[in-house]
Image (cartoon, rainbow, N blue to C red):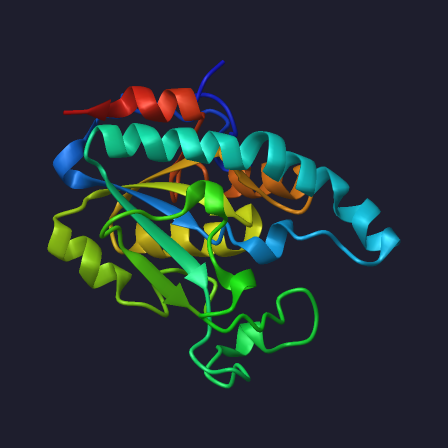
Length: 223
């Protein structure tokens, strides 16, 4: 088992195995999506805390340490490391997209300078690493990330972050539609539940991206 055969949906059950992936430094960027303080803060309501306990455990034990390792590997190889975070420019969030104003989980009010909107300390950008602010699910739709990647000469994007079935998926689809080669690192991502995470990976794999493990992604990186 491995990335060439895992996470196959109905559409790709019998498809040929894809070619080997080679990620050349000058053409590759790592994009870390929305790993922000707000998502790892304890829940006040005991029932909500119980519901979110598996997600919190995956973030603490898998996603954050694995993403830190991925970032370190990319920095060591001088691969561009880029961050996207949900952050509105106004205090009342009036500049947010409609999807982030609707009632429910996705109703996010995260002013850009507030502590809960910042990237978690374990993954904090360093130096002049690019950080884009977005009020949309896709990191391309509501930012100048498309132009930034083009200016950097990027053709391949390694994706990590949350939530697999929301902002990660939306960004991956946008990148694919713009003809970037996309690699999603499964064990650097999370959805609210394991079922949602796996289901979304099966949906986007093979057509919008290739879903791989952290060790596989690091192995693809070339000088």
